[in-house]
Image (cartoon, rainbow, N blue to C red; front, side, top):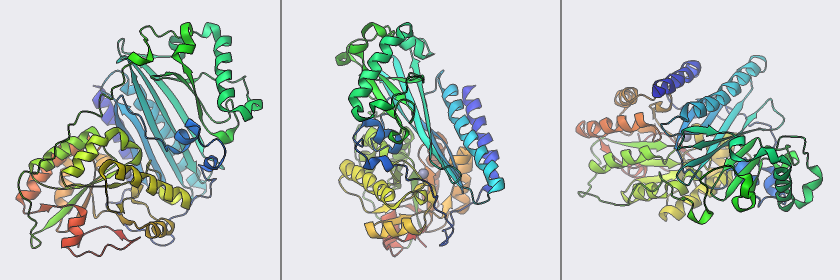
Length: 492
Ligand code: ZN
């Protein structure tokens, strides 16, 4: 029943956004993309607080995200000039509907606001990005934080988004702040929090504003209760979102959670990330016949648990594909990436946190590319410098920086729109209808429906005479010139 609700909701997203659909990627012309004239969102990176946990994490996601509970699911919309990339955990349990509803609401409000502005100012642009982290503590408690921002041409500054959820898996219930901390002793709690803020931000202490509810967003983690605060709540706005840890040992009987033991004992396994044992088996010798048709299957936005299913089917059929991964997911899915690479697939970057590069400053674009590329290199040793920008969006600035940094941009010639239809039959049909020798096909390995479709597509393409090759193989055999800064969409 929940699943039905879940997919119905996505159907709504599809219906609403259908009007702006285009079947294929079209390369952008010179002046097609307007860069937003907003404040650089990571301006604070140059200030003395750049080493604080949240200055980095919440505004720029520079840290690898911890995902110990739930699979990353997504509400995505790639309808220029409104872009949405909202990630939320899905765990097939009681919590899904509430978390999805909150996430969808963020999408809906941002989208409605955008279309409202667009009626008056036709050149409006907007982009909403939300990521999440999740902590599974003692196999019982879950802390989830969803965070991000909205950038829009009609805002002076980006607007923060912050929400925490805490779960008790034993009782299948959401915990609210009153279930976690003893607010009958709010004075003691506030003093403790204040002392921690003073330690973290000694120079900002005069800005403290204690009239606000500082405990609105708290989060269960392994080390303690993390208090998350939006910019301007307790400290000046320019510091962005902050988080302050109240360690379990210092909370003592202020903590109401029943089964909390010592941090040393606490459950620290990532129950989803370690599923794979790395085994690279290449069954038969692989020979590519340049005279026979070949295509490159490409997968964006992973790695994810469904990536494993796709790797299994590729392995079974001695075929290869290319994966464009999100930088901040690399650490939590290292084994998947190593396995994909060891099997002979190619793994490239798809930006650090899926921001629309056309809306970023030059230094932010460089950081997106560098950081992701470095994380990839540390996982698999080497990668060639192909990358795919989020939403396939490029402008002159992105191209120039790619050229200067030695990257080539890869988009696609067949768009299965699997992010929108989430239907294995549609993914299968659009692949089979649109494919030709030299196609680069776009999928997202974060959907079960895509994995299901790939299980049919791979054997069928092979029996139709296609060879499934990596992008490097495609470009080599099809003699496609791979020049720096170029945007390549096909192998014909
Ligand atoms: Zn993407």
